[in-house]
Length: 417
Image 1 (tube, rainbow, N blue to C red):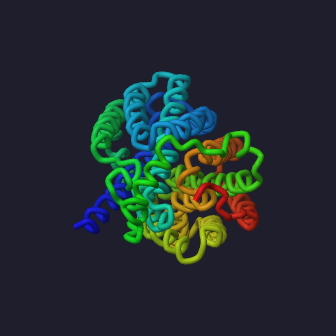
Image 2 (tube, rainbow, N blue to C red):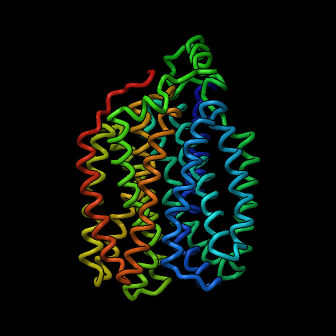
Image 3 (tube, rainbow, N blue to C red):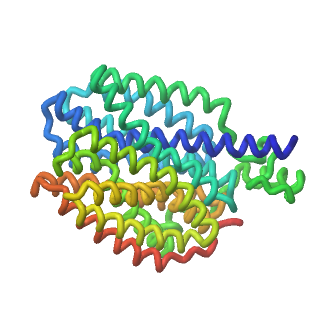
């Protein structure tokens, strides 16, 4: 009975993390495929300009990463998840009715702020706490929520916007987020020890050891202060490596539909390719989790970069071939499915479950700052050239740089074990 209970609780946390990834990816990345053009058309705004303001909005939203990382350390992942879901839900009501670019940008900044809270900081800390050793498997399954956002969130939002308008659509999203926050009050558990279970489902850990773990975590003060983290070489190499990989991922996902339509494909085909990439991402999420566990997170990162390089080259060289386009979307999708678990897995590898939240204040902030420059790259390039191809060449070069950085990550655990 105890084993079944532990199995159920563990999978419940993984499933919850998947839903959080789903909402975060949909609101801050995938949904931009349809919401940016929808806002531009409904309000008469320039689409390239909206993409350009997305970057500063996301930078402002990164303040949430710093604040909510600290909140996770003080109050736990559960409290942070509930608070940020409520905040995002409330903002959605205002966002959908934004009448000018200033209100649009402020609301988008807040969505990034709260999205970073539940989708980047708190849920990965939750998984790192429940599965410190088997995090690759757990994150591999949990991060399926990211490609599912591409496959489900985007087409659903596109239909809702077409039928109800952008204001009513975001009202619905706001209600759903608030309802899920209420559900999380009863669902989420910060640590397995809280419910009398061992981390990783390790049956060799005694009840006394679990009690000791719980006491050690209660009120734990990490020695990894912000100043100490900023002086650490590994922190910077890791942050830039995964920040650049995330930059490429956002560039590929957020504008896949507009790029394909610019090549002459209709919206239905383009959305179909986005869904195909998402389905491939579901496979990729589990695949990269397995690669992480069977090799090391560092090796998985290097292989991931090589995979992205191949995918982008295929997308660039075969843009006039439907077969090549399909292949490129599949390859990109498999890669997209992995970044959500490889980056937090490396953070957990280096800092462990005790110091994870403290380290995430710096690492996730730097990663996020780099990641969202993707919108500026594509937006500015689109305004200057009218083509997505130049931006894809930049994304290819960025992936090569991240591959080089992956070689220099020291993955020795320096946090409390």
